[in-house]
Length: 493
Ligand SMILES: Cc1ncc(COP(=O)(O)O)c(C=O)c1O
Image (tube, rainbow, N blue to C red):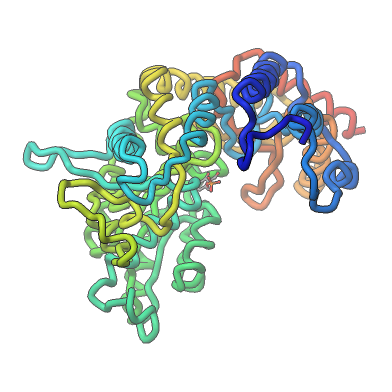
C-alpha cells in the first residue's frame, strides 16, 4: 500500500480517504455519463478474462489509487452493461442513482439486521419497507375495517423469496406433525402444484425443503401460458384419491418466459376449497399490481398466504433485494424462531422486533435502506410511471415484431417479456428456424450492441426480450429490432 495507513488500523488518514473517495466518485460519475456509449456486452475471450485476475494471494498491498484504476479498467469498464438501455436479458433492472449512493452509505455504517439494537433505525426501516411493499401491490386487506398487519422479510432475491414462502408454508402447514423437530420422516408425501411455466427456483426450493420434485405437479398451461385450472383441479382430486396430501398451490404473477399471469382469484378459490396453502410467485411481475391499468389482473393475490416479490427487478434496485410477504409476523416466527442464550439476554419487552427471529439468517445487511431511500426520494408514483413505460414499450416491441413479415411473435405481452423468432422469408421448417434462432442468439452476444439471450417456448427456440429498465426509450426498442434483423440477415444466407 503506498497510501499510508493510520497506526494500528486499516484506515487511511482523513485527507487520503477524502482523495480516494473523490476518485471513486469520478469513476462512478463516468460510469453513468458513458453508460449509453458502452456496449451492452463485450465478448471477451474466457481465457483473457481469467488472465486479468490470475495471481497468487497478494501478501503485500498495492496503491489503492492504482487499484481503483485497474478495477475501473478491468472490472467496471468491461462489465455487462446492466445499467444501460440495451439490456434485454433475463429480468435485469438498471439500478438507480439514489440506490448507488444509499449502498455506499449503508455499508459504511455496517448495520446488522439480526437484532433490533444492532441497528434500530435500519431495523425499523426494513419493517417499514415491507409494509410499503405490501401496500404498493395491494396485499394488505381491511378485515372488518381493520387493516391486516402483514409480516415479511427482505431476502437476497426472487429465489430466496420463493424459498422463504414455501418454507413458511411447510413449517406452518405441518406444524401439527412437529416437523421442525422430527423432519419429514414418516410423513406422507406433500404435493405442490404450479404451472409448467413456473420458475425453476421452485424446483430448487422443493429439493431443499425435502419435499422433492416428484411431489411437484407441473400442471399444463393454456395457450396464453397460464395454468389450466381444470387440469389442476383434476390433479388435486387424483392425488387425494391416491392417498397423498395436497399441500400448496403456486400462482404465477408473471411467469419468467412470457409474463403470463395465472388466474389468481381462481387459484385462491381452489386453494381455499381444498384447504391448501396459496403461494404467489410475483418475483418478476408482482410489483405491476401497483398500476391502475393492471390491478384487475392480480385480483386474488391479496388472498395469498405468502407472496414473493423482488425489488431488484421491477423496483429498479441494484442486486440483491427480494421480499417475502406473509399475512402476519407470527407465521415467520413459527417458521424460524430459535431461542439462544447469547441472543436472548438483552431482550426487552418494549415491542422491538428482532428480525433474526423471523428469518433463517442471523447476520444480515441493511437491504432496506436503498429501497427506503428510493421510495422517499422518487415517490411511489415515479415507480409506477416507469413500470407503465416499460409495459408500453414492450407492447410497442410486440407490435413491431408482429407487423414485420420476417419475425413471428410468440406471446402477447401483458407485462414486459416478449418472445419471438426471426423467420426470414417464412419458408423454413421448425427445426431450421430453431437452429437459425440459436445462431442468432449467439451472434447477438458476439456483436454486443444489445444483450438479448433466448429461451424455449412450445419446444421452440425463441429470442426473449425483457424490458425493465427506466432508462429505456422508444428509440432503443427501434434499434433492437434493427440490430436483430441485421444480424439475422447476415446469417440467413
Ligand atoms: C418469476 C420468477 N421467479 C423467480 C425468479 C428468481 O429470482 P432471482 O433471480 O432474484 O433469484 C425469477 C427471476 O427472473 C423470476 O422471473
